[in-house]
Amino acid sequence: MWREKHCYENLPFICYDELFSGEVNVSSMTHGGGVVSWDKAPGVNVDHYRVELSNGNKSTTPNVTLELQNLVPGKRYKVQIFPVKCGRDLNPLDATFYTLPMTISNIMKVKVETNFITLNWSVPIGERDNYFVNWTEKDNKTFSTELCTITDLEPGQLYTFTVRAVVNKSLFGEPDTISVYTKPSMVQNLTSLNNDSTAINVSWSSSDRNTSSHCYKVLLNETVQENCTVSQNASLPNLTSGTTYRVTVFALANGTEEGQAVSIYAFTKPEQVKNLTLRSTENTTTATWILLADRSETLKFNVSLYLNNKKLNEDTVYTYYHTFTDLKSTSLYVVSVTTIVGILLSEPATATTYTLPDPPDGLKTSVINTTTIELSWYPPKTSAGGQNITYNLSYTSPFWGTSATWNTINNSTVISNLTPGTKYILGVAAYAGVNISRRIFINATTVANFKNLTLTMLCSSDKLLYCKEKVTKDLLQTKLNNTIITNFDDSIVWHLYWKEGK
Figure 1: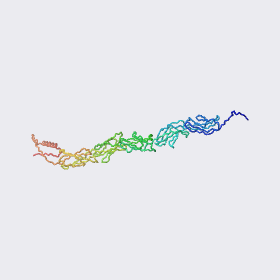
Figure 2 (figure 1 turned 30 degrees about the vertical axis):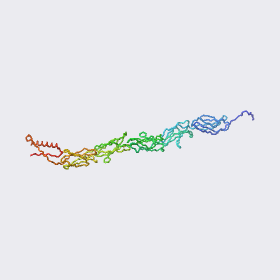
Figure 3 (figure 1 turned 90 degrees about the vertical axis):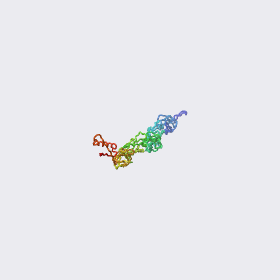
Figure 4 (figure 1 turned 180 degrees about the horizontal axis):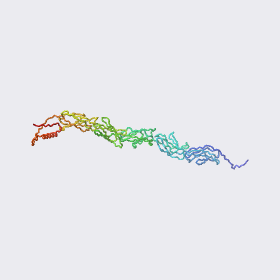
């Protein structure tokens, strides 16, 4: 059917839907947005494009790109692109994408040991699936929380840790880094060596692979002597001799991370005892000594006893004196005292002493003639085996007032040039050093050369025949005998005979 229309009248228009296909690309992603672009819709008369996000945001644009803003970091979004043609939506293009996770911040070390380090950091704004931690080119690990522990590390080494938030296993946020040293290993072979009386020298070693960043702190009885020395040895001066000290050493990595401390007990060489004094009796010797340096700890001493260059006894004591018993008299003993501290010994101090002598034994005499007496004896019984015994001899004539003393090392002597018929008091004592024993005595009388001395007595009495009575004679004889005894006693040889006159 033919129908005529005026050319100035609008004619009806039919908008046919066409199939919309193409690709959507999201680029230039940031924490809060990105740029979405898509292929142009086919045909003509497309008024604009409406962009819808899964969070409900909608935007329109006549272009085929749109900048997305104010999105949540690390979040998954779905975007749909609707071409609008003749007031109607064509079928959309859609795609999904993730914004980048937020940058990690405030990363800190929580715990540091020789073979592991624990880190934590602040929770980033937005969302993330987990965290990616990297510390060497080949070593990395994924963690689900803001706290992580990295194990199997080497002691005393520097590690730089990089932490990123991760979404979709492939999108990483900006990293934060931290450099941390593991604690160094405890020092090994800590040894005290070449110590003297006022200093301790120590050395040690380390098993760590790289010790270039290491230094060492040295403590003496908890007092710091070396704060950070790079040497693996130290000399600790100005100490007290004969004293035990606790030496502690530990390594520091970068001067901050302290390894486990190792301690030993070290000793200064003890001082030699002073004023070693010996006091003896016949069978004991007591040694006393002092130390000049003051100290609070108890020391021990090795005390040894020698006789004739042979060690007889050795004792360890914790006092400043010691007594040896059951000794031989009149014997020269040597006492040695050594100070002991730990395994160190002082120079020995020695002193000698004689035990006090007992007197000689078995003293006897033999009168040889008018002017000679032989005297003999035995050594003191308690000095059997002792050497260097000297005897002091003496004789005295009480009547004549003569005397003499001399020394001998023999056990007998012959005394000559004596006076005939005289009683001599003979004495012997034993010397030991400057000490002398009690003196023992024996009497001996030389053979007499008799001379006669006649005393004439005249008796007169007013009593008739009194002088002829026996009692008178006996009384006279007794009185005369007593008079002689009073003057001579037995100091010389004499005999009184009574002879009747004619």
